[in-house]
Length: 433
Image 1 (cartoon, rainbow, N blue to C red):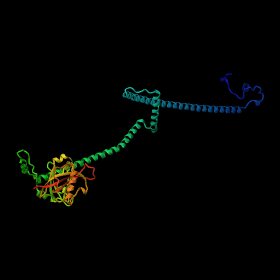
Image 2 (image 1 turned 120 degrees about the horizontal axis):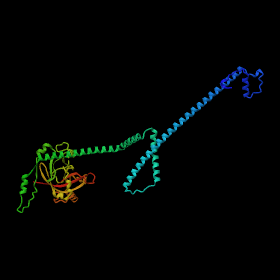
Image 3 (image 1 turned 45 degrees about the vertical axis):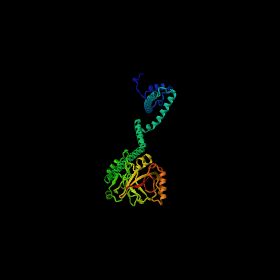
Image 4 (image 1 turned 180 degrees about the vertical axis):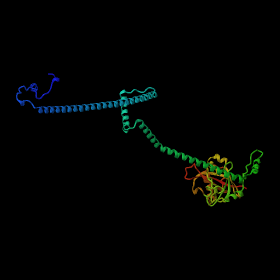
């Protein structure tokens, strides 16, 4: 019987016999009515079987669909992970290869440079040691770069930061040097200004005393002419012990300063100054003859010195200026030749004129024992004259006698190791008629 001729009839006895025969139920007695299943029971069984079959088919299809989805998702995730890992591995490999190539080029250039400098005599090294050294260097650089990688900054940014930090550190290290340079520059400016000020003060003081001398002093041209013409038939000059080379205008000087007591003059030197005396030995240390401020000061006689008394040591003080002004030139008497060129000086007062015959010079400490003011007797005076002439820095040609009053010129000394040293120049005051 064909399928398309099939027609289901539950009351058909032949249909059920065929079905049961195929199912192995041939022993059923079909003559009994109860052997035929009822139409309702058969229908419900079939419906239940159909529902169970459909439910199981849906569950199976759902499980298969879920399993296939999970497998597909897993395969896609695994594939993407493998691709990402492959890309990262490829990138790191390229970066490592690039760094190694760069280091190799730098090492090659460095080796070529060293080989050139050493004349190609550098000893070859073991290849394994070089590879190990490069590996250690790479590990060190990797450790150094690790913080930069962790910070998320590029190597260029980190290089810029390191460069800025290095510059800041250098600037901090250079701060003391800059301060020292500024201090030195300021010190040099101050020292230069002080030096210029001193030179200007010297120039001003010299100009003031030169102007004073030009107005107060005049030369004895007539007397000098007579002296030059006084020769004998042999052609030798006759020495005039009474010759006075200058004339002092005392009225002019007293109109400027009434403390004037004398004028000191040494031919062919800068010594050509007025001498004052007052009740204070420090008054004229920083004052000029006009009593105004003056770094050179003024030559002044000791407050206890008296002219005209043989037993009195007439002491005159003056500065030893760096430009040899005031009494700066008397240190030249340490040499015998200088004494022979300048053996005498002149000291003029409003009432008397004296020639100073120089007899001794020495360097002493500034103590009262080296500045005797008065002598108790002629013997004491003679003993002191013997003492200073015996210790003199030059040998005198003058006659040393107690018949003449002693004059002492005192100034500072900068060449001795004494405590507060002084340079003393002694002479005898010989009156001129």
